Image 1 (tube, helix red, strand yellow):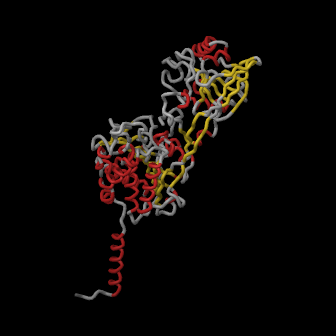
Image 2: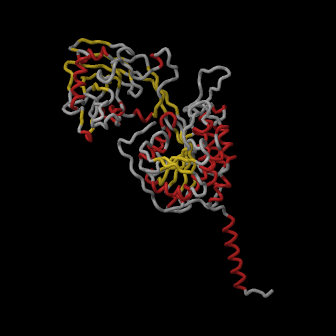
Image 3: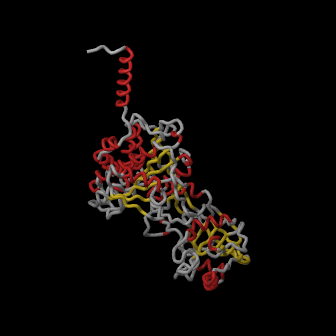
Length: 532
């Protein structure tokens, strides 16, 4: 063999070194997804999270905490980093009980009339635990809707006063109503009415069933267990503690209170008829009437956790941007009262041990890559989705990473059931750029993609990200007969399908995380429907 010149030998070793270096690191590729995200991986996680020992992972519960620890330990073992030293983000959740010192008194022309709880009034669960004594104004339906040229607060001063309002909205059963015909708008919400009352300076709110729209003017309010013989004692309201930061006392009133305030139910009905006829404003201050309200609501605070894992991006500039892959890991718990031989645990295998396991599998796959994506990756498992999107709502109001630098959110919720090749993409209409990426990456997974052309975007954790104008897609394989039943067990989950969905998320996230562009988003309209 002819001896190579000295410079050629050096060049040969350089070429050989580059080739070896190029093969030594695991790069992002479709082959990695199939190798690392397997049905067996998904099966093990689903079987653990949806086991009887997890008792349905209710929010809050010790079992939910155990699931959180399991996820965090898995992240740690795979080398996925915590965020600022912790895998947990506490989500403050409040549980309310009705105390025994509630009061509603009407003072009319100097004479006081003390009302009886349950028969005459019932505090709402969203009421502020406070006392007020103030004059009273009638404010129709309590709505200010400039887009419909309607304002119940026109011509009245509600500052420092208690407002009395009807439930619902005017012309509810009129298909020609400017309030979207027979369709509800956001103004039917009592919480929306409370916001409006507070905006106009009100210090308390009394709600009544309109005699035209309702057959009964009875006080209903919240069905507190302490006021009932049949409601379970633990059926108390739960909410994010931040949701009560701007509230006023609120009660639902019945016929006796109506008579004290308006003289008769017929007088109130006449006011309602005038509004219903032509949307005229009938609001006024009630003369010579003072109302004393005291809502005695006792609150206990719990702190379930969102679980967060983080992979720092490799690009010095793009690493400041983050791609979020999320799912909720909670479910609805178990039946407190059951027969000895009865299946009483809502295991939640598909909903949402499958989505949780999918996020974990994607996290594992990214953790095995020696060359990390350019953008940073965040893996978020949310608590309290089943209670009202608690975890995702809290995260988007207290983000760990700036929302302005969050380029996309991919949500996995129920990914292991129904036909093997079908996959729903919720949010395709709102996030067309990401949908196009998914269509291209789907050539590797070959799903029949069912694109949802819908404005209904509530029901899972992507909603609050969309509300903050973050592009998203909700990966979903559809409802089934075991939804929210004790029969949603691991043996019914199709782990092959769940693995394929997870691979598609892995490919999509990898593409997003290695691009430099930002994606389009069709912004949320104010009246877009939401189911929490």
